[in-house]
Length: 67
Image (tube, rainbow, N blue to C red; front, side, top):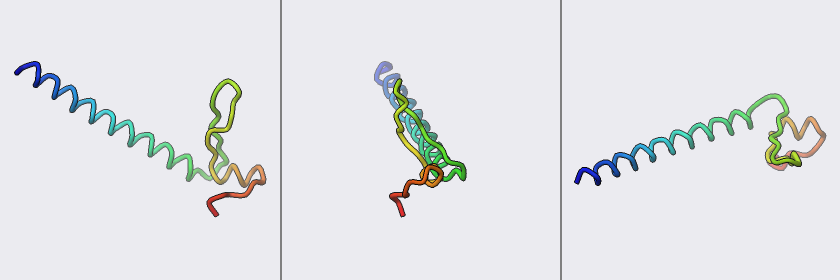
């Protein structure tokens, strides 16, 4: 019974930590999107664009697909 309780407590802690991490990712993404400055997120050794905000698209003269 003790092992089952320890496992359940561990699972609950993991669930809470995952929810907190997800919230922080959403906050970061929203801040990135709403930033007034052009921002681009690069990925990998080739520095490929993974994500850009609309201010970046405007800065480089590209159309914003969300408009």
